[in-house]
Image 1 (cartoon, rainbow, N blue to C red):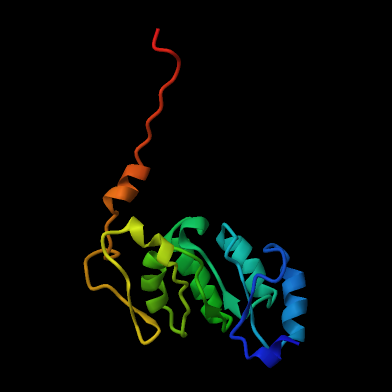
Image 2 (cartoon, rainbow, N blue to C red; image 1 turned 60 degrees about the vertical axis):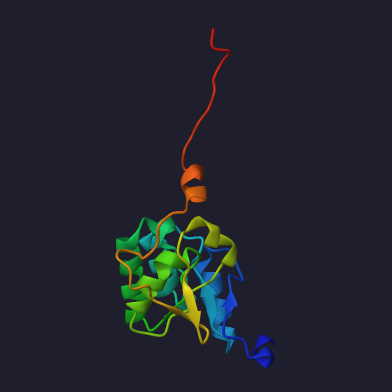
Length: 157
């Protein structure tokens, strides 16, 4: 029984689109289920939230279409009393989570740090919201080079 391990949540235990299965599993556990990181729309998240499939909603702003759909998902999640644990891209999600009325969790991936000139600051286990303009980050030269496409086609004759 997972509860004996004092877990905060059980993440993605079933197929991401299995709202009924997640709801049935969540009903049998004391530990909240977290799911949604692979979903790509408000509608998909709404189906999970409405079914009572998770205690933690895990939207991914780039995957669901940007900040506006993310905010719509988080508004529904808040209305239904769900916690928020956005997936990936903490540089965006740290800001969106700070605006969420319930305590939110944000994943941290150190291996993404080379993408940016700045670093997110962690203090006492929490991310500090950057006070720089916009999202507070700029792409590194290394990451900018990844966005430049170049290809050679044919033999040039």
